Image: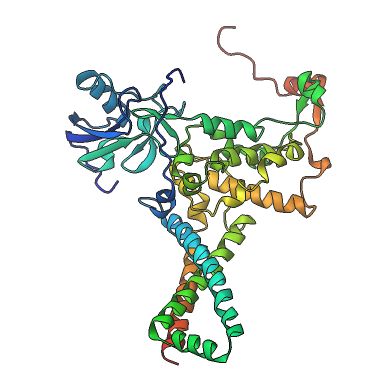
Length: 279
Length: 145
């Protein structure tokens, strides 16, 4: 990122290729291509595929950093290809490889199954005292802005998996739950509507759980949405410690439910101003 | 996956935590913490073997102590001291962060994003400076008593 030149120039792309039908191990291929100002790595790959290498494979969808599909190892850092501008990388040679720490399905396509499995393992949903209330709600949960801010940051996760690719612990411990799942575990346990710590703890408080994290901070550096999963893991550790010594969330601090009739009344009290157009 | 062909195992393995590459300072501390931790465990085992030599009699013990008086072992002793100081002080940093201190509070991510890693970096610098100071002072008292 040192050289932020915006002059269009020819760039060499070193792309790691792997075709399971032909190859037993990946190899590198080089392509030269003109890159213009503002062009992202994803756009460069599309151009490369259209003009030079039609068999090149990768995964992408939204092209605007929302779907989390196009995570790649660009110049030795896990990044979203759609959010990374080629000329901002400041190098004449751009290396693109699939995300490490995942199995490589083909070319730049990682198998994100472990990410999804670990995410599911921590029960990433609200677990309330009364399941009937969840299935057939009689009202709405009350939550103050401060209560929401306790976990709001961690709701921005797009499950791109960059954090697991960056994590040094995941590199050697495939069973480590990893930054994504642990941050999501914190996101739900910190939610005042949730009472699921008892159900979640058997999946979280394990040998391959949060205490394998020694705060390398690589996950937070890699996260393209500012979720800061390393922070979530530290807060989860604190919560586990506090719970174990009896200072955890008390039943009285669990969100109250406002009956639907009161919700309607509250909405009516804060009715919008009368229409000024199209009367 | 529709393909029956096996995917390529792309796990970084030991290289993933030995090579910190373009990551930030804390990634190197992670590496240092693990290496010194493993070194201290290895030392504990060697230390048990070493002290067990006392059972072989005075001559064997004094011979071993004579070996440990060599300059090479003094250097190893110093490296051990430095590893213990780094591991202990970095461990204090990790303990404090694990209890949620010096990390700030969660807040809505607004670009350019700030991270808890950056927020607790002053603590990191202070602790590493303290470790360096103790290691230097320890070296001066070991080599220039």
